[in-house]
Image 1: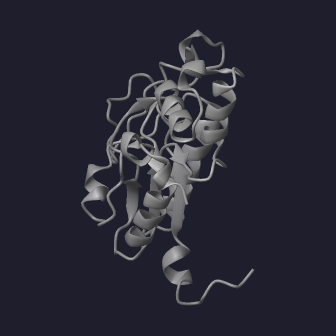
Image 2: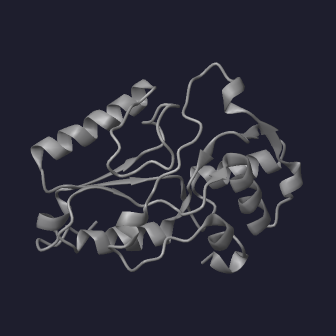
Length: 196
């Protein structure tokens, strides 16, 4: 692995990427604004919120990027693998758990653009279209030639393990800072042509 060029270190050193999905309670207003204070309902979410607070305290000029489900193009993301398993009848996908999935390439391009600005603080980089995990799984299955009708449904709210249901991030403010358009899953998962 090659070392990071020295000219990149000053700008990248204060960057922190984090997922928003585990850090909001049912009472949080949707879509969630970048200025919203995290109110986690799980220990995992609390750890992420604490990390954001620590990074901001140590480096006030830090860029804290909150995103949603990151969808790959080669079948290797956890969400793609989960959709494949569900299409084969292994497991269920929740109809009541809503996120704003983002394409991995769109996200990477937007993060690079954001890093080149003088921005600091919390920035959301999530897709503009809220979808359930079930609907996301159907889009992935269809893109990759699997039968979406084979996916069984479930409800997160029926499970004993707590977790946030509706986590829609408002990325409008950050989207105005970067030229990369964060596409909706109905667009970036529409055809196999999006695959490398």
